[in-house]
Every structure is written in C-alpha cells, then in structure tokens.
Amino acid sequence: MKIINPSLSADADYVYMKSIEELQAIAMQVRRDIIRMTSDAKSGHPGGSLGCADFMTTLFFNVMNIEPDKFQMSGRGEDMFFLSNGHISPVLYAVMARRGYFPVNELATFRKIGTRLQGHPSPMLSGIRAASGSLGQGLSVAIGAALGKKLDNDANLVYVLCGDGELQEGQNWEALMYAAAKKVDNLIAVIDYNNLQIDGTCDEVCSLGNLQDKLTAFGWTTLHVPGHDVSEVQRALYYAKTLCGQKKPVIILLKTEMGHGVDFMAGDNKWHGSVTNAEQTQQALAQLTETLGDYQ
Image 1: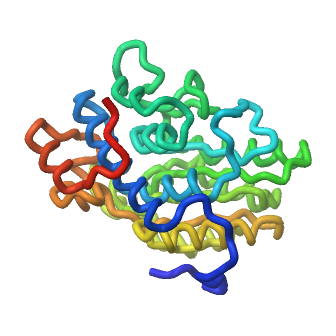
Image 2: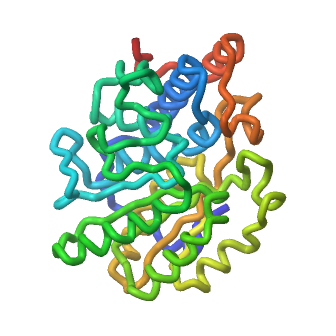
C-alpha cells in the first residue's frame, strides 16, 4: 500500500537523525526488548507492541522535535506524543529507553512492584504526560493538547497513536468531529490498523467499515501507509507534517501486522495479551537479531 497523494519525493531534502539502516536496527532491538519485558513479567501485550515497533522508532528518533533530557510536562517548545492504546506500553517504554528518557536497564522492571513502568503508561515516568487505561480517550486528550499549543502560539505538533479496535468506542467519533470542526491542524493522529483485537478481528467484533472513507468524510486529511517499511513510514510522517497548518487535522492509517517479526506470533490475535513461555521466548529472540545490546 502506498501513501494517498504520493507527491512527496522519496528523496526530499530532510535531515534525519538516523539512517534507514540504523532505524531498522533500533526497531529490531526494540522487538527484543518487548519479548524480554513481557516474558520476564509473565504479563503484558506483546502482539500490538511488536506491530508498532517500526513506527514508534521512526517517530521518536527521526520525526518528533524532542529533547528527552529536557522533558517538561507542559510540552512547550517541543512536539508531544500520547499513546491512547496504552496496553502496548512495552513498545513505548523500549523506544523511550533507547531514545534516552531513562536507563535501558530499567526495562527489566516492567510490571514489577514499585516500578515506573506500569502496565499502562503513567506520568510518574519522565516522558509521559497522561495516563491511559480505558480505551478511546487518547484522541480527545491529544486534541486538547493541540488546542493548548495554539493558545500558546507554539508551532510544535501533537501526535497520538490509537488502536483500530479502539475506534469502536464512541468518544473517538465525537473527537474526530470536533477536531475537524475546530480546524485542529497541528495534530497528526495515527491508527494502528491491524484489524485484530483481543476477541478476534475487528470485522468480526464490530466492523469499522471503510475506515478511510469515514475519516475523510469526517473532515480529516487521510493517509494510508505500510507500517513495516521504515522508509515509507518516515516519508509519510514528514509528508503529514507538510499538511499541518492547512485548517484540517491529519490522520494516518498505519497498516501493521500484530506480532510482526516473530513467525509464530505474526497475524495471530492470541498474542494481543498473551506472553511467550521460556521456550517460545528463546525461539522469538533467535529470530530477532541483537543490534544494540540487551538490557541487563
């Protein structure tokens, strides 16, 4: 699948922090982190986390204007990110640690007593501005943050990641209408579009229909992007940035595969909320090359 309106050249003159090869290596290590974190904790949500590793790596390393060592809750002077489908916290924590928000070895505390790395992100951790839990609220939070930036005359952007099954929550559709009506054009929303949720496919549970047409009809500029090609993800995100400031919010349908990168997990909703046992963990890690050094 390609970007709708592919007018952005693949050779656009952008200054990237990491090369495509470096992004791929980081995403590979992030997947190892996800498997180890959830296996060690014997709980968590590895499937969707694996599916979003390429996107999250690209966003945090090459797209957002952020300085992890200067994080402020207010978000003034930098881009902001909100994770609405907070159960995929393993991918967020792994990417944040690799980006420098906190020590990589803290990943070993995931879901342990007293940890900052809760099952759902919490503002007790530097880099997190809003807790998640009940699904369907992140888009509303992000819209509020984007409107706050407009009041502050802050030219930076707000990003939010939502799950596709999460769109079965009605609050999202109120938020989608509101953002378009109020021309919230400093917001880029991304939908993890894997068509899987804990009870089966989205089509089986409560079909979203033609999501692209719906979002466009709701007044959003809608892009459709393959989620495991970091070059395409990067290009789409930079193209989305060029669309900001045009009186319309922007949304990206990110076509992903649950469990991507591990053959026995790929495309299987069993791994939405199930974790690997010791043998499966070794099988998964054997398929995922160590590129940056595992946490201790």
